[in-house]
Image (cartoon, rainbow, N blue to C red; front, side, top):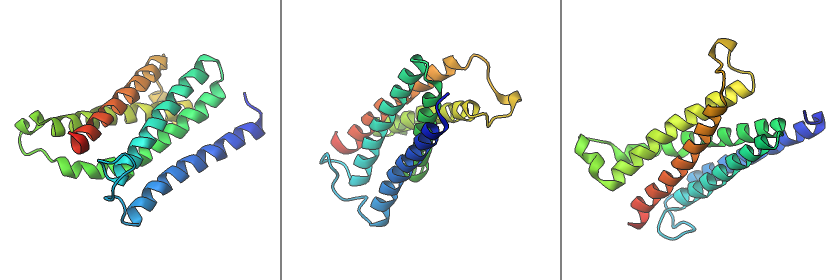
Length: 180
């Protein structure tokens, strides 16, 4: 268990990081700059900002895996909670609304790479985000005992793999929307 001062400092730092990242996204949207040219060239600024944050998010979750492997469970708990909170915020601010651009009229629409990869990304990302949220709620003793899972290390590993797959599919989505 970490010293109370260290734990408090880590939690404050995590809150600032999540709030700052989400404020960046909100600021881009509020200033009307979301459609302007992004950092990488082909995509809009808001898509590039999201891509950057998603890469950082997966790196952060992977670091959390290393913290757990080293036995630093307190740091692991704060770390993973931070990244899952950021992911939920990004889904709410960006990804959920962007799905209006890929409405499916018929099943054949999914044969279009742009549509198919985007919906696959959304499906895997939704399942992963829900798994991550469940784990964080259990890890922080928010879930009632009756809803808690036993042997949830496998769910943690599966969720980390899901975050990686979601990130890869997010990169593919970016490619098919702005490069191809």
